Length: 85
View 1 (cartoon, rainbow, N blue to C red):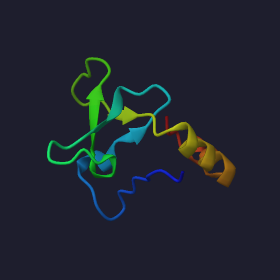
View 2: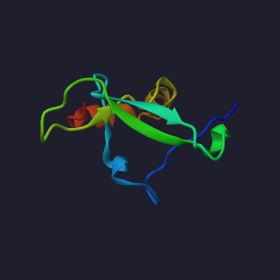
View 3: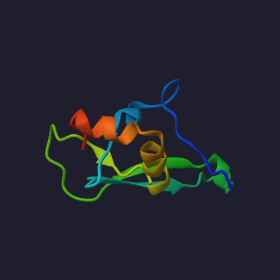
View 4: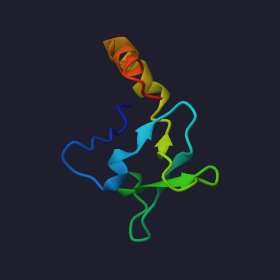
């Protein structure tokens, strides 16, 4: 089971600029389209987990698997040194 990967480098909406956080203010939910109940053709929706004041950075938790891959590649340590959440 390889699952799906989101990659906003080439395509996507403004949501591709939403960053990772261990304390996110959004959560992600799969939404099936009315015309198709195929989970491979779903949309991803971001929902607020709390009231978010204006000009607050929007964040969600990418996933345990994604974070483990960053640690494995040695990338996560570099991200933390740059001050990312």
